[in-house]
Length: 574
Image 1 (cartoon, helix red, strand yellow):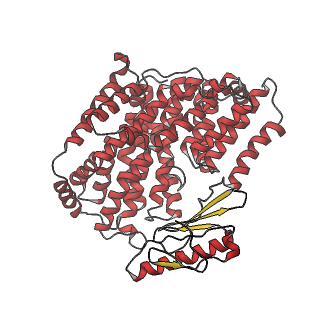
Image 2 (cartoon, helix red, strand yellow):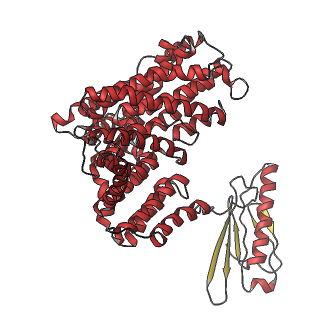
Image 3 (cartoon, one colour):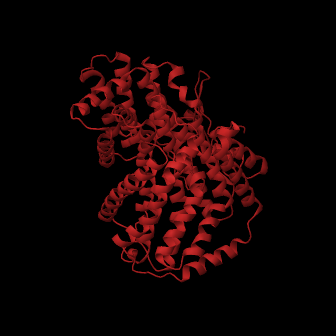
């Protein structure tokens, strides 16, 4: 646009702007461009942008361009240097500036606490004899990392990344050692199971299965609970995130059923919603323990055992064989126990099967995408069961299922890329496993467990007494942890080494520690991701959470200790 003479008005888009003074015209040229609009609101927005433009011109000394959503100030100096700055205007054109992207810094208090623990261990706690400097330094980094996973200065994956970065930057670990676990089959088994779960959700098959069992069992409140439990049992082997199962499928169904019965958070919660939510939360503990892929942390327990030299052969079948009997006992008893502790006011729910039948009618027959998910999952399950005989690892079996779903159009590569939980799990899981493995390589786990074993030996305790004592301690310590995985990562290796050192059969110890890690998932509102999900629904308060969680938690120990103990003897675990 060419400059105008002195005293002239510049017109653009029907709006006029007074020409700058002769003094200012020597160092700048101001032009304003505003799109025309016939509506009064558009005129008001345009006038506001013009006002901002004039102010910018006066303050910055430069050319001002005003568009529909952007003001650009360009200053031309005598030396020919141009300095350009832009201020965004909100899309509605009201002249309010869009704020700059906000910083999301680390949470200061959790950061200080996490780092301080590592610093104290590394520099203030005397290093025991026989422990190398590198081992002690890695222990301090490991403790800081686990502490951060619990109290959260950064998201879990980010904090694990910071931890492994510290280990490499301080030359405590080599790059190769720090990332050695990223190629482990069991880690990718968990990651791939997240992708398979995406197929269940995307296709709607998961919702259909749950609704079908509501139709079958839903004539009473207790029947509803058992129906939801059975349906989750079908889905759990292919959905390793108990939080995703509960939050993505079962909580929405429970809320819908409760609302149909007039049960809302608050005064009417005890009609139905509180019971269904607590029962589903508590039964998830057993469902997560029955199959190796029922919970993300299960494979971590086996990896920790393998790092100690006690690898579990044919892991999926071995796990299922050990967990199925006590797990089924827990699934049968838990809804009854919750029913007795907090009985729902509505005992009969005759409308629930009708509503489920109506929903199934609306869904219509199974769609092609659902059949494809069902078929690929059946194939994956068969490969998991017979994988050892066929020479196909668990992660490979899952990859076959995922590949078939991508070829068939169920999943896209973009679906996998957007599955943040899977990639997040890959990072923190592999980092923790690598650190744990290197602690063993450095001899630290063996040295510490030897000292504990010496103390237990002095007390003349046999391995069964040590086994029970450590499991009780492991249970009580979860009140200090806000994550099942964090507790397993922090204490798993030490407890396993101590049990085995006292004479506990290695396979029994290797399986029962991760079993146990699932059983206290409903102890508190922060005990697990699924516990936080159900507590957030508002159907029960905190005293109820601790009361029911404590009673059911102790009951779980008894079920798995008594029923499991007899079953494990029968199948030869000890």
